[in-house]
Amino acid sequence: MPAQGEHFLQIIIGSGAAGLTAAIYSARASLEPLVFEGSQPGGQLTTTTEVENFPGFEAGILGPELMATMKKQASRFGAKFLPREVEAVDFSREKLQVVSGGEIFTADSVIIATGASPRFLGLEAEKRFIGRGVSTCATCDAFFYRGKKVVVVGGGDSAVEESSFISKFASEVTLVHRRDQLRASEIMKERLFNNQKITIAWNTVVEEIFGSSEKGVEAVLLRNVKTGERVKYSADGLFLAIGHIPNTEIFKGQLELDSNGYIAVTENTKASVPGVFAAGDAVDHRYRQAITAAGMGSMASLDAEKYLAALKKS
Image (cartoon, rainbow, N blue to C red; front, top):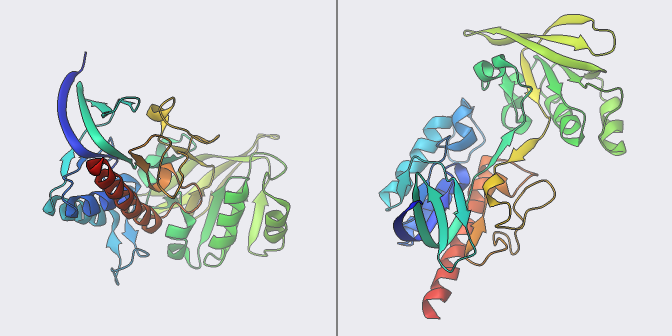
């Protein structure tokens, strides 16, 4: 049996842009939140090199530096941090329960900011080159490929949209799709087919990524799944647009999730259980930006603060 831990006015699960912004707002409201940082403290931005689209940093800022600064800001106002993962929750009780490291922590309110994980191809080189030629976010990184050759993997609306966006910067975009038809909507396909900068490699998969520590990605190995033919294709960047998986497994049976596993919310951040709020990529499958996650984090904190004030009066 897990040991009984402390009780808090608020627990925040996750330490990316949403979780840390919620921590800043809640700490400034004297809620003294406890933040479970998870297996990747700082979230997805810690795997990003230069962040140029987060307001307030004219010359850009390194992803890990931005998240470290946000954590210090939250700590300054009284947020507490535990470098642990949450293993289970029980939201059926009056005091919301969070289990971590063999302890049961309870809270009057919980903010979930566990984010989402991009789907990868499963190649070892992806980990080596993430943030150095391999990207899962065109909006974040397309600017760095101005005048360069880029490969995009996928066949749905996201892949088509990202290919079109990258083509505004890159000299050439090759969309690699393992089938002979795209899953994207007709209007998205029409835009793609009319874009002179984009070519499609049908029935093709990426088998390997080549590069160096100095230059990053330099080429990819493409294989035609019908003929078996392999081609080493020169490329400066590889964008993966094969979907995201929300990090919400532990909330199944505890909260209402949509068909894709994202947390269902009403009134912006309220989850299906009173006192539980959600923000960032665990909710948002559309924008997936640090700034939108941060905005939702502030909203979740304000919603939770209002909930706690009403709870105190009752």
